[in-house]
Image (cartoon, rainbow, N blue to C red; front, side, top):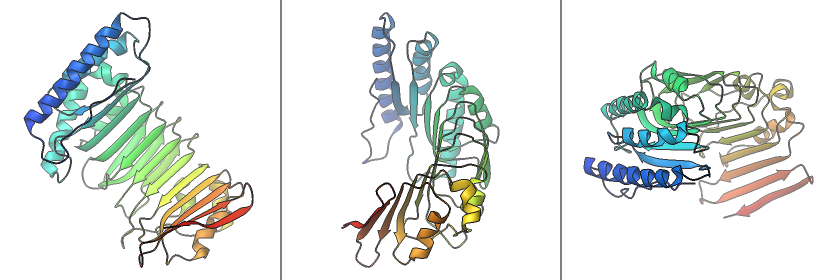
Length: 324
C-alpha cells in the first residue's frame, strides 16, 4: 500500500500555489515509489492516492498509467479533491466539472484501471457520466459528493463491475436509476431533496446493503420500502433520520415480505423521541429472518441518546443499552 497525500490546509482558503505545491509533492513521491518498484518481482497490492484537481493531475495520471499497463499494481484508488471545497458557487462546480473531464480524456488508460474513484464538487454534462462509466471499466467503488448534472438531473448507471455506489449530498440529482449493475452489493445515499423516490432499482441481483441518511422536510414524500426496493431482497438496511421528520411509511407484512424476507440487520438511527413504537416495530412484520434490530433515539429535550438493541439470536431484549 502506498500512503496518500493528506491536505493540511483546512484552516484557510487554498491558493493556486497551494494546489501546485501539493500535487507536485504527490507526483514526485509517486514517481519515486513506482520507479523503485518497477524492477522488483513484487506487485504493489494497493496504490491509494489523494490529490487536487488541477493541471498537474494529468502528470500524476500519466505516472500511474505505465504501472497499470505493466500489471505492477493490483488495485488503484483515486480520491480527487477540489480547490474550493466549501461555499462553492455554480461556476466553481462547472469549472471543476470541465477540469475533471479534461483529466479523464487525457488519461483514459489510467482511469480504465481504477478500482475506486472518489469525486467531489463537480457539475457535469448529461453525456459525461456515461463516458465515465465507459472509460472506468474496472471500477468497483464510486463515491460522489456534491456531484450532479444540474437541477433535477437524472443519473443512469450501467456498469458491469461496480459493487458499491455512494451518493453524498448530491441534492440536485432527482433520481439515480440503477438500470444494470449486476455486481452491486452496497448502495449508500446521504441527503436528497427530490419529492420522489431517490433511486430506482433495475437489475441489481446481488444488492445486500442499502443505507439512507436524510433530513426530512415538508416536501419529502413518505417512502414505501416495498416500492423503493422493488424485487430486490436485501440483508442489511440502515436508515438515519437526523432526529427530524420520519420519511418512511409503515406497511403491512404482505407488502414487506417480498423485499425483507432475507433481512438480517436493521439500523434505525437518530429517530425522534416522539416516534411511537408502532412505527418502529412494523419492520419486524415483514422480516422473519431478522437477526438484529438497532435503534438510536435522540432526545431533543436533554440531548441524551438512547440505544436499543433487539437481538433475535439469543432472544434477549436489551433496552436501553446505554443512555448518555
